[in-house]
Length: 430
Image (tube, rainbow, N blue to C red; front, top):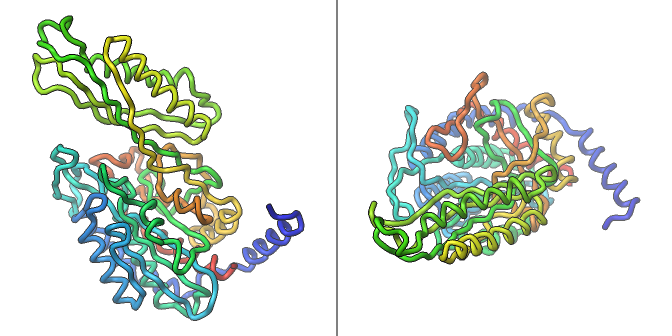
């Protein structure tokens, strides 16, 4: 813990550096303007050719080729398909990391975009389309643009910038490692050691030209769960001769929701239990032997997280037993709470305001969405913010992870400016 004197000096230094913060130099702004057409083209290409987690081979190859063309030190096959680019400034200093996620989702696209995805695959045994239904295509294109801009202005860089293109943010396939956890395991925050990390996420419900952020807890801890239910198979015409796991599954789903509505102190923080997949049976007149539920839990409070997990284990077991069956839950933690370091956040908000305008940088509330960017923040201070991608005047934007999801190309320009500015300002101030 810092002493009061050290804290005061630290605060004074930050305030002094912030007050000295200038608008983006003209030559830097011109470089950003010049790269925008490329950023849009890259985004359209990635959108048309989406790849699922740990399978982003084409995406990684395109990223690496671009970074090498800029003269960066490039490392590939990090955490399977990740790419790292290292840019050394002309002056010594700290190391800052900028991160973009590169994977798509098993969603069939349903819109009329000229760069619509027609990719298909089989995911967990189910045929599906593949789509950038969360905007990772924009994140990748933005960071490629930032790398090009900053590579042209090494004289303005006091230190080193590490460009982190991360696979599998949506979670690796079952039985595989991946995402931020594996990036960290593979040394992304070392050689050279990272002092701070920044990231952004485009948002379909935030107007273009706007940035939103929250200090402290920003996004939820995410758990994936699988409920394995065992019954006794029989003919559908004589259910009394068996134990119906589908009925048990329905009762368990209903029971889980009472944990949220009747047991969780929602006035403290939000919490969510969602069952996203039910699997059971093969024929209309056969009661199967087993059923499976797959879903997610989102929490922003450690105590609520422990309560919900404990009660779900108890409820699944006891409800199944009440109907003469049995049930067990398998758990997988996907993210911890995305935590924006308060001091770093306060230091960098003026950088966002300098490129977006103070009136366009707004605080927001915590989200029950999850981000594995949170694992980096457990190790080094990090700041994660939200970039507007909604067409102005749109009253009904489509949510992320849906077939109709859409964000505007015009939103990416501010993303390039924001990441460029926070990287330079952080290195200049530290």
